[in-house]
Length: 256
Image (tube, rainbow, N blue to C red; front, top):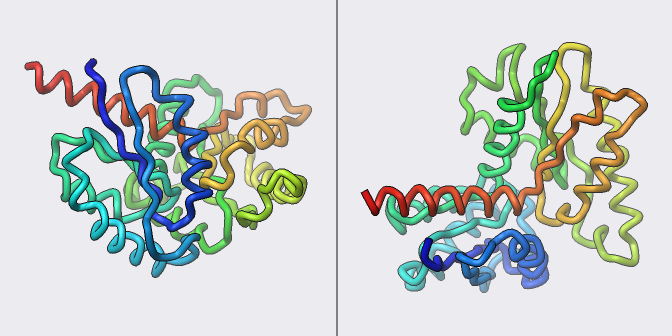
């Protein structure tokens, strides 16, 4: 495959968040994708509400319109059911992949559930930051998978658990704060398991949680060997993997 240009979009106005995204995306790109990182030049530095998300969609579209022709694909690096993903798809057309890390992580979780042989029903959960995102992400999963896969008793979706982690918690000098909050969230998560419905996948649902994947996995380990099946989805890795698949698919279609 020829060299492809990827634009990684941070829809908030925080350059520090963009640097965190870059540290997680670069390691998975490979030799055929060159990434450019873009931070929304205005608006909120942290998206705390649906109103912030709607505002960031409008601001990003206004600022990106002139530059989208330069790129072959787009990765939205915000873990939310963000309307910018759909809006960018309309803006750039069907021939250029547009992927959101939220959607990508759900696809990755379903891949694990579908391919992993289990004696019980395998489910996935999302671990997010603030409590306000629990409903937003749950509604997003329902939108993507449909009511039939999320509302009934045999749903593969176990729900969203918030940690209460805020950006300051993940600073190196106080990372202990974030880990304490993660451990409490994991305890709640494990309490929701039963003999027939086992949570086997946890999606990390917030960019500021990047880097805590191994800690979450260790926190999920118990004396019960069934818990050793737990897989933690790296949201940024899932996004890059989906971009690669979409680019390969697009390239194959063009060569037919």
